[in-house]
Image (cartoon, rainbow over all chains, first blue to last red; front, side, top):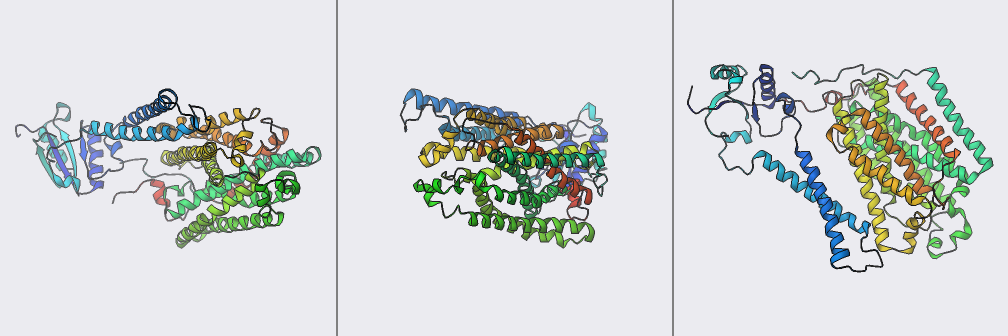
Amino acid sequence: MNDGAHGVVAYFDSPKAILEAAYKTKERGLMGVETYTPFPVHGMNDALSIKFSVVPWATFVCGLGGFSLAHALQIWTSATNWPINVGGKPFISYPAFIPIIFELTVLLGALGTVAFTFYLMGMPNFKKPINPRLTDDRFALYVPFSTANGSENSVHSFLNGLGAEQVSLVTEEL
Amino acid sequence: MDAEAISVGKFDEKLQTSGFTNQVVFALIALGILTFGIGMFTDAERTWRAYLLHNVMFLGLGFGAMLFLCFHYLAGSGWFVLIRRVPEAMADYLKMGAITTLFLLFGLSHIYPWMDHDLMHSGHFLHHKVGYFSTGFFIARMVIFFAVVLYFSSKVLSNSLRQDSEGDIELRHKQKPLAAGFLVLFAPLFTIFAVDVIKSLEPKWFSTIFGVYMFAGFIQTTIAVILISIYLLKRSGYMEYVRTDHIHDLGKYMFGFTVFYAYIGVSQYLLIWYANLPEENFYYVNREVGTWPIVGIVLIFSKFVMPFLMLLPRAAKRNLPYCAAVGTLIVFSQWIDLNWMIMPSYSAKGFILGWQDVGFFLGFLGFFILIVRKFWAKNPMTPLMDPYLHESKKHHVEYA
């Protein structure tokens, strides 16, 4: 086969077709299978045996960070650095702190989630997409060449047999 | 492909009732009535307070269930069809709840301080509320509220039940305007109801968010009771077709309304604490006397912090026995919350637990179980002819 190709990509024209194809690759025991779709396809996690994401942990840790930061900020400013008597209330007045604790928890939790997701996805990524239609109406299934997946010819013919509208070799770096 | 893609099971099954559980239910109701009888002759004021508390607690499940049904109908929701008979049975309790609530009218002078003529003319703020808190107007508001609620609940329930036999898809479409009408009318009317029944125990107090606070607690508890009911039904072999995805959705609701409740609770406290006006702050000052502060701390932890952390992981919301356990905690917290709202104006020194509380809790529980069981025994566990039933069985949209 062609030199420099590291895998095969098969294009499908509907979410149902690619979901069925993904299940068939699972049945056959192909490793490292990846799909590229214009929108999230329900059931794909199961079809590709994708484990539950670690992103919620990043949300939790960043939220906890915001929670602690809000405490530190408010206690330091209102009780240590510049104490001001407001209506005779204590310097460390918990009810007044709650809105800021809430906001900072949500803010850092959300920003941390986005940042960590970007990191996991390898964003930002300025490489040219192998097929721009993958953001529109085409669904791609990628199978890397490896000893576990069998010979290149067998992978190629297997994908052809799944009813893909086009199967091609991938030489570009993904 | 995916073997679990479609729910299977006996969809037309009805609840099998046994003579023994019937006897238990009637024994519970008899206990409630006995409590009322003895209480009237020993300590009428205490008894009416306990009656009010437990009546509102179970009535809230009816309101919450009706709201649950209506906002799903309005949104054209499909997933909730498989579990719909659970909130429907709870909404059916409203007719019983209306009777037990209107029964409160016999005890007005024992419960509400605004029945005291001298008190109401003792201060500027109270004096201005004399016209609003007159017995006739109070009864009129109560009757109008229940007339509206019962009109909508009976319509929404009968449309759903008629569809089982007639199979007319139009019946589902008719629910939408009904749901919209109910939600629009319920919001202001329920605020008035909450102010009348609970807030007027402290007639001088002002809190414009009080209706929302009550609503938040009710809907949180309703979702908890729906999950507990599904757990009990599944354990007895019913509703085997309800899948983890449905439980996950209900778990998300329970989590969401837990946060919502805390949000509303903080909003009410924060503004009163900041402004520190004497006509508002006495409500919380009275709750910092005796053992009430402990109750307040318990409430914060059992109704928000604990359920929040317990329901945070995804796996927790997908585990039915676990959700039912958290739901039980929330039901207990709702009881604590109602104590926190109702009892300090009766027992200033602190939290009290009397035999009346036990008796009325069991009594109202008996009424509640009676209605709910009857509903499930009479009707199939699934709305068989609902046009969205198939969608609910698959839980998510199928790709063409």
